Length: 121
Image (spheres, rainbow, N blue to C red):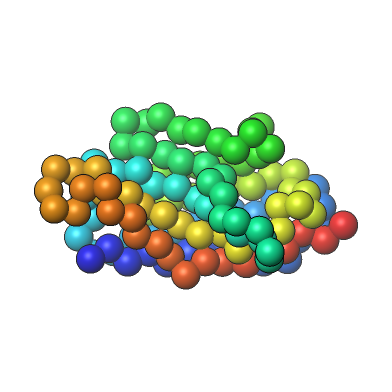
């Protein structure tokens, strides 16, 4: 199994920055998608940014130009650099990995426990 652990959340003023980290351990598929999701109280979980093994990235429209998703050199760490944060960015941020390698676990999702990001106005 794959285990994901997020870190880097905290309290920041509007306009500030945070960098989230996600460390993956276990049986990591060579081909995969890794992503950051977030969920605010009373709202559905939404995809913030995703990164495929090919290098392609995708972003939620409201974070384009402000957030950057990237992978560490070892491919076992995922980052989300968040700049010019807004109060509406406040949420629990979750790391996600989707197995895209051939096998019985193809398309299986793995989730971290989440890290809280709070942006004060």
